[in-house]
Length: 313
Image 1 (cartoon, rainbow, N blue to C red):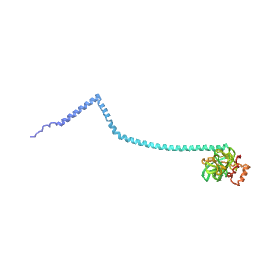
Image 2: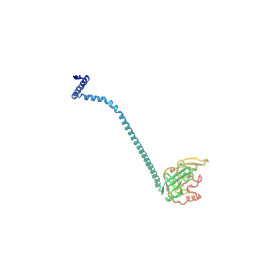
Image 3: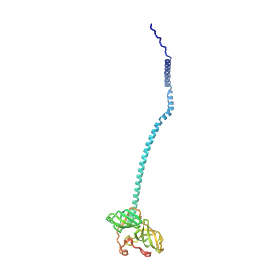
Image 4: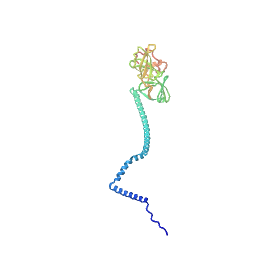
């Protein structure tokens, strides 16, 4: 006769689990009803959000640091580029300003140069300086104007200050100027204040001329202005040559030797003026040329020490 098993008794664990589930459901329903009526869970969530903010800040710190580093790198690159651009613009601007200042100075110098010619009513020709040779034994200028421009040997060269020298050689496109300061150059002068006749020599320095054989009895003082006398016919009379900067006795104590500061600015400038040929007036000056035995009129022989004392040109 088959045996039948009796129904299994409920397990204690299943009953406990069911009871816990029912308890959780009851609590959930109670919380839902309480939240619906009092909104106290919103307040709990708000407090929890406040409490979690430091955690969120720490969690987002690496991202923020990386973003800041990238932004700083981009900003520094842009600043460096702007700095280079502004520096280049500043250099270009300074170069343009320097060029404008140089042009303004050159314009003012040319105005003075041409103004001096206009005030004297002179027939002149403007000639640019091509090269300068200021060696102590050779003082020359080369001009960018030659025989095809009407330049000829012997022409007097001046600037806004006074006499610069004379033309000694020409080609079709260039001309060579022998400066007053060349050791082989001499020019007859007179003291503007008294009319005493003297001769000034170059000594190889662009800032000094030599005035030898000045008689002790001559009325010559430091500061006196010297102008061309017109003797020899090479340099027209009345053009400034320089001013006496110093006077001292020579070795013989019979004469004075002077230093003369040139009136012309021999070591600067970009242009000079060429005087057109002036008619040589007949008279003592022409006779004096013959007495010099064919020497260039600008290199006239010195007068006796006392011959020029107190005489007018």
